[in-house]
Length: 426
Image 1 (cartoon, rainbow, N blue to C red):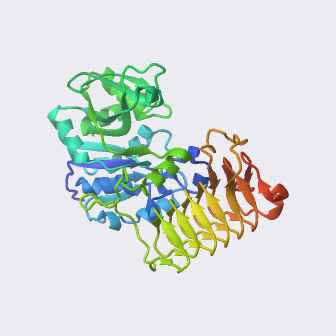
Image 2 (cartoon, rainbow, N blue to C red; image 1 turned 45 degrees about the vertical axis):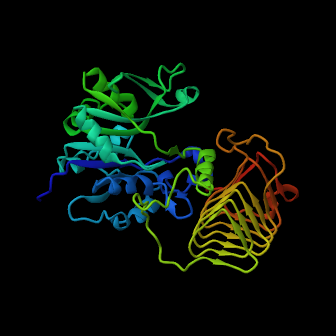
Image 3 (cartoon, rainbow, N blue to C red; image 1 turned 30 degrees about the vertical axis):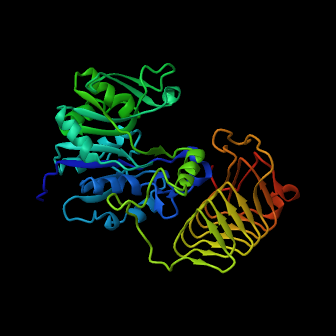
């Protein structure tokens, strides 16, 4: 089979469970979570690839891959349906001697060596499937070439007080990397690694083979230190645009809310850097005569009979008469009953919220199941959940599954409580 040699191919790591998103990712991989009423998180790195002129992308899936696979399909929305290259979904596959899950980011790439070898690229771009940003990878490649780098790491300056949350690089005045610190207690620099790498192909191949027996082989922990200690040329490419790791419910909610700001920090409407997605052919949205909508994104096919303020609403949602939604995310195909009031909530796809329900009442209390996940004062409702008529739900709460009146003592789920029905994971 003749394959056209590609200068640079991209490998997009999209296998993450996103456990810090709690019930939102119980049934779907984090890169497939809806964003901005129309998109899924993976649309952003995929669109960056096509906007940067990269036409060969391997997408490595693992956890709950079905929706991701269906969404990507053969890559038509991103113009990645091609005879040579295009987009290829790469799940872990059974080998004759053993069936092996991806155990770390670098192990996932190593298991797809034959995919990469068929293109014999000069450079390989490694991406993560769960960040919201726009970036021209071609500019980063030019930087890589100018510096005769073996590895280039995309970095961004972060406030020094937050630096201990990241992998930190220490670089000289020419941006040559001198040292690393993985989530250091006392950071020596504020340049954080974004988990975006360009490798010269020979260097990546050598490092992957050398480290292949490391358990949970990972770029940050194994491959980058191996290259550094082996005297390879590592450089830090500094990026100063918008970049959001939507790894927590708070940051995910915030990034959606920023889209409806008067002057959004992240602009989805730029002509020269479009974000592409798989769009279903559905009817336009409908706003009734009594409806009120302000500062919100409303998806196609959505019917609004109540009020929506400062919220992001997906496609095919029905919002009943007298219902009021504020500062919330409502994902596609969800129904909100009449006279229901929803404050600061994230409601996943295909939910039914009854009539006369109130979400987000009372004072905050720490969540009893997992205070670090279910915080920020949010109400989080997982996919395919049902909330019965007339109940009240407090803050820092989580609901997943078909719930009934009996699940709400005295008609209320107090702040900090959860209802997770059997069979639904957290």
